[in-house]
Image (cartoon, rainbow, N blue to C red; front, top):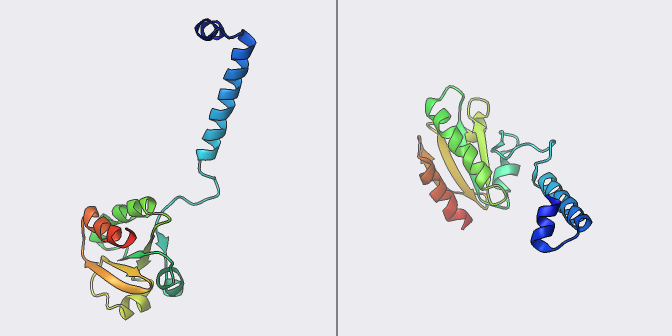
Length: 149
């Protein structure tokens, strides 16, 4: 390859080898920097509980979307991949959270959750929107976009 490059650019072979080595090092360093750290969890929704709801949702510095769900709920399982996708795409701009209503009845009761799935959007600790039942991804994203700008 060195002779080919040399013929194109008039470079000496050792100059070409040095440039190739430098380019390979840059590509390798960029690949390592772009790779996620092995000890970091993948982007996804934050799992909150009765004990952590105030801290992680009501005191959040960014808008929050909370999915109230239960493992036995069919529509909850249908909305789960949408919530996962939004969590990955809005990381750093919003908190996307999930709370299992079977295990955390206090928050669900206090918020008047009567059916699941229910998705509630919070801004500055206040409920600003609510969707009860399954909703398509674009509906949830439109509501989230309205809060994140």
